[in-house]
Image 1 (cartoon, rainbow, N blue to C red):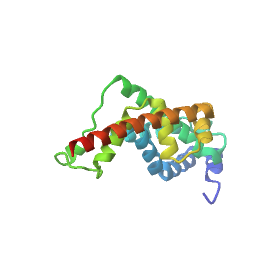
Image 2 (image 1 turned 90 degrees about the vertical axis):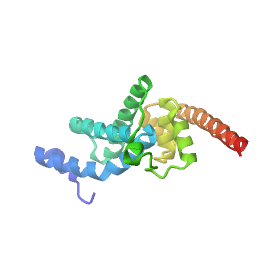
Image 3 (image 1 turned 45 degrees about the horizontal axis):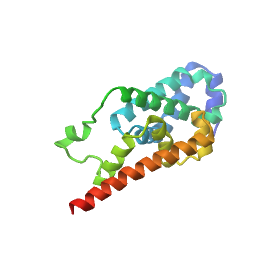
Image 4 (image 1 turned 180 degrees about the vertical axis):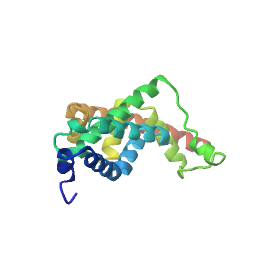
Amino acid sequence: MSEPVLDRALTEGAATKAAAFQRLAAEHLDESYRLARAILGSRAEAEDATHDAFERAWQRWSTLRDPERFDAWFARILVNSCRDRLRAAARRQVRDLSAELAGGGADLFGQTRDRVVLRHALANLSPDHRLVVALRFDRDLTTKEIARLLGIREGTVHSRLHYALRQLRTVLEQVEDEGTAHD
């Protein structure tokens, strides 16, 4: 931002604060949705998590101490929103019907067999493992940045990535072996 919109917004009236927040929300919406989609694997869940995160951010807007750190502050809120949804999903089974409803099972996202398999493999990771994989490979964060964002040790991030990638590799190898057996 060229001018200190947040600084001014934090010191002026509520209308300006709302305008500053709306501007930041618009700037971060697409990126936030993509991260939530990578973590959650479901379009509908990602939309809901992103909405929840922006709602929480607005409610906690007055707690933002350093306007220059909005990205990190909001990322923590978004990740926590996704984590809440992952925990809730572990207690219930959700089926994304958006592709089927869109056109008789049409492949809305251009999914190939490999993408479907990968999405399934990601869905079977624990919430903690899925979070670190999404943050590392979708957001391209370093393990140090992930550790800071999640409030865990860097070694824990390394460990979770190791086990998550090992589990993903095993699933993908099994699918590949099944595919060659059917040919």
